[in-house]
Structure formats: structure tokens, C-alpha cells
Image (cartoon, rainbow, N blue to C red):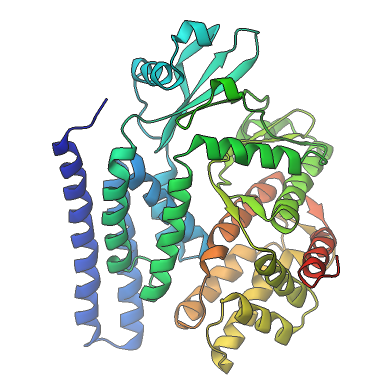
Length: 443
């Protein structure tokens, strides 16, 4: 069903008004800052970012489509950049569920896209959605042979709004300075979000992502990826296995220590294998995309967002890890410079970057480490360093790193809740060394 022109103009007006409000707040703070002390300017910029984040949440929560998805992308960037808690917390509200689309609309979209009546395609189809997101809605169904599946369907008409939404959000994102970052950095970070959003609108691409993950992770006992059913897939409809398991929140109360160890170690192992061996990371790691089984098996869901990386980039990222693991300051800083995290070497910014890496890599440094144990202060240590990081514009988050750190942050959050103790450095080091060897033509 086509959207009316007025509806598109209304979306533009709402996003444009948001951009004017957020941008005006930034300009106002710049004017006031001329008359303030350094501490007052820093506090003013922090308050402006928090107020801007809240305005984004207030507007974006009423909208589906690319605008909502980009808003969620801002939340992902916020976590990937380890911004101040108040800013990140406001933006995380955008990950709440969207309002469901009526089942009749979803069914009509399936029939149109698959060119067949619903009762010829499925033995049963649930009207109650399993979940509704910014771009799509998922329903449980059963194939004619009795196979239980999940059918994910793009919201009708979403393609008609994406270009306008992205244009308006790009203007607001860069002008509003929500992230307190240099304009150049904001521009390439938004380009990264936009690329991931467009990728999620193609279910043929997601089906290919699922097949890649299923093949690449098949050797890990305790990680499951759904199969797809090509006869029931198009660019707008994706049909895949309905995997067993329950959300982490429901699994934890009865999970034994053995189950927790299996689940936690496999989550971290799968992340390292995807990053350093496959060079393609499942980059939407919120808890809703994971199901946990009674034996500790973890099922991975939703492969619309996959971040692919070059062999050279992955090797440089591995060198950063190896430098920090060895407490080799110069190796770490040189690798950060090579990857684009340090745009210029200066003593002050070098020291801040080094302290940040020591905090970031803390679980990997000193043998067995208990996630969520008394010594696990990674989040607090990073937050304490953030004011110093933000004062140095030469410390950047390269675009390829944003979704990697978002994924790593999501995995870290889940493993903390699972409460696993392992020698994480021992797990990671072989992956690092193989990635470096391959890039250097030695493996």
C-alpha cells in the first residue's frame, strides 16, 4: 500500500524540526561557552548532548522505518563510543519495541511478495507477532511439512521513506553534535550507520549472511544458527527455522555453572571466530537476538546487520590487542595510529589512549578473570576516562570499529550476566596471531 505524499512530508517536518531544535541547542551552547570557564563549557556541552539525546528519543520513538532505525543506530554508536552514561542511557530507550503492524497487513504483504495465498504457503500462521522492530515484524508459522518457522516481513512502504529519512537524520546528526565529536568523524560514523540500515532492507542479503554464519560457526558445539527456506523468501520476506530456547532473563535462574560456562565461553569464542577468521561480525548483539537452551547452547538470531572487514584491518586490530596484552605501549599506540584511532601522536593524547586500552583490555590481561566479579570494573574505568578522551579530538573511533565495539560491548554485557570465569587472553591470543600471520603472508 503506497504512502501518501502528505505522510512523507510530515515525516520530514518532524525530523527537520528535531534537527532545528538539536542544532539550535548546540549553537546556543557555543555562544554561552564564549563567556564560560573551561569546566563550565565542558558541563554545558555534556548537558547539551543529554538534552539532544532526549529530543531524539522523544521524536524517534513515534516513528518506524529508517528514522527509527537510524535513531537505534545512534544508540549503537553511543555504546560503541562509550559515551557518558546519561547520553547513552537516553539513546538506549530507542531499542524498546515498536507498535505492531496489523496481522492483516502483514499477511497481504506476504501474499503479494511470494505471489501465492497464505494457506498455500503455510499450514498455520500466527496473527500474534513474535516481535515488531523499526524495519520489520516477525510471526511464527508452520510449513506444509510441519516444520516450525519464523517469517520476518519488512514494513510495507518503508522503501519510500528511507532516502528522505536518511537525508534529514544525517543533517540533524552532524549539526546537532550529539556525540561531542569532530564533524568529520560524525560524517563517516553516520555513513557507517546508513550503510548498515540499507543492508537490512534486503532479505536476500540477510539470507546470505545467515548461510555464511551457519557455515563459519558450524564447528562450535553449542552455537546454533537458523536455516533459511529459499522457496519462502524474497527481498522483503525471510523464512527461517524457529529455533528453541528462551531469552537470557528467563534462562539465568535455572542455569547451572556448567551451562553458564558453556554459554559464556561459546559467545566469546563465536565473536572471535567471526571477527578474526570470517572477518564478518554479527553486529546487532542486543539480548533479544540470542536464545539460550537448557544445555547451554546459544541460538543466534537476526543477521540483517553484518559488518565485513578487510584482512589488513583485522590484522591491525589484532596487533592492538596483542600490544595491550603484552603491556607494550608503543606497539599498541602504533597499531592504534595505523587503524585510525590516533590521527596524530602527541604525548598527552598518547597517554590517554594507552590508559583507555588498559581499561578496555582488562579482562584479557592477567589470567583467569571473573566477568561480574569484584575486580570487573571495566565499565567504571572506561567511564572515568571518557572526559579525558573527549578532550582529545585526535583520539577517534574509525568507522569500521564502531559496530565491532558495539558487538563486543553487547557480548561483554551478556557474559557478565552469565558470570563466567576464564582466561580470556588465552582464548583470544591464537585468533590474534593467526590473523596477523595471514595478513603478513605467513598463514
